[in-house]
Amino acid sequence: MRTLCSSTLIGEFFVIGFAGLVAMKDPDLSMATVWTVSGVAMFLCVLLCGLVTRPGGVALGWALQVALIASGLVVPMMFVLGVIFAALWWASVHYGRKVDDAKARFAAQADSSTPDAA
Image (cartoon, rainbow, N blue to C red; front, top):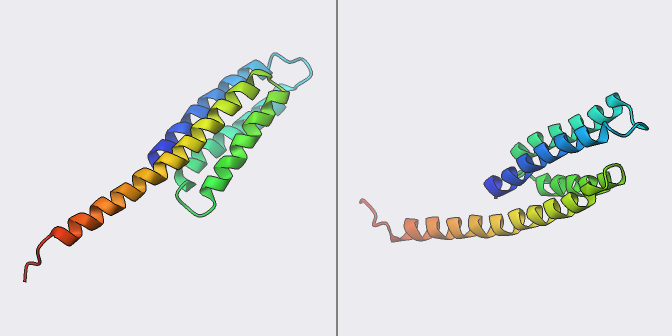
């Protein structure tokens, strides 16, 4: 699960950075505000790569997805990109858990079929 979720988060890291560049064009927003918000979100993406397998890591990832969708209020294209990344996050978590379960079953099967050395 870690690999799939981390890949999604790194993709989001870049999308948030590019959205920050687009948001800078808005005359109502200060550059400091745009880059503070974008920087925090980008930092959270990288941080979550390491926390995704810990308790609450997936929930924090979902909170980031909601924030990404909500950023569409500032950059309208982010509504579309946020929904796409939320779907990718769901797929990463769903299929990542299936892969982890299959690996655990395979490892248990391999351990039970190994003859004892004694």
